[in-house]
Image (cartoon, rainbow, N blue to C red; front, side, top):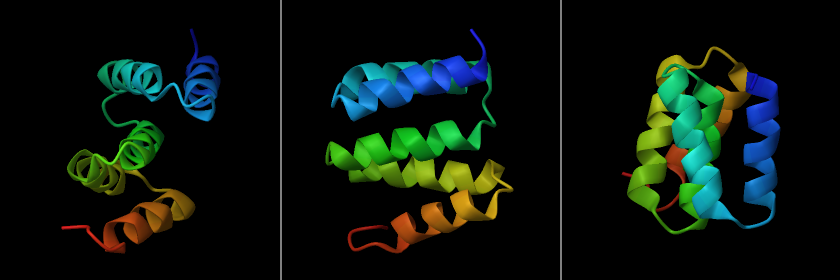
Length: 86
């Protein structure tokens, strides 16, 4: 399955509040492509929705490490500056 197909499926799970399945799929994407910044952004966002702030922070930091897209970098930086970020 291509990256776009996986991305669409993962986003659909997250949109349906099936966060556990979305995280499982993001984990698979990261396993296949460890420098896939968008997967870290999206998994971090799901972790944040679940109240797992430490895991979200770790993913946003990883996204900054790998992303060259200014929009994704801005988003990750905003999440790291939000109240409760370490």
